[in-house]
Structure formats: structure tokens, C-alpha cells
Image: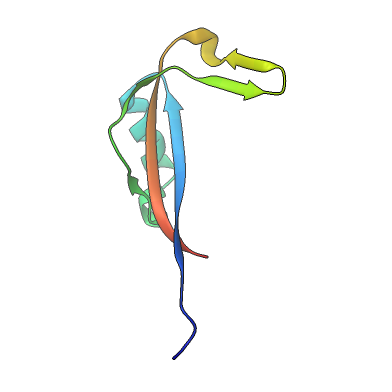
Length: 75
């Protein structure tokens, strides 16, 4: 038997004011050519950055559109 080859899922999230802008960025970065595909629904999110001294609301607490893409890579 040969060595087993393992794959893992890699994710990339684009945050933008609108879904159109997020998808334009996907196209501009040619992420489809790199093997990325949409991983789920595109929707409005609120973001918090958690650190050693609590959390900080990002984007002034305003919702932003998040579009997450994934691809399989070796490793």
C-alpha cells in the first residue's frame, strides 16, 4: 500500500458593504481559477474581534456582507 494522501478544506471570507461588491472581488481575484467555490449563503453579519482584554466591535457594529469560499488543498 502506498502512503495516504490527505486533503483539508481551506476557507477565505470576503467582507464587503454589498453582495455585489463581494462577488466582484471574487472575480477580480480569480478565486475560481484557484479552486474556490461558495461555501454557503452570503449574508449580513456583525463582527467582533476577541482578544486578551475583551472584544471589539468591528465596522462600528454595522453589519457587513460576508461571503465565504472554500477549496480543498493537500495537507
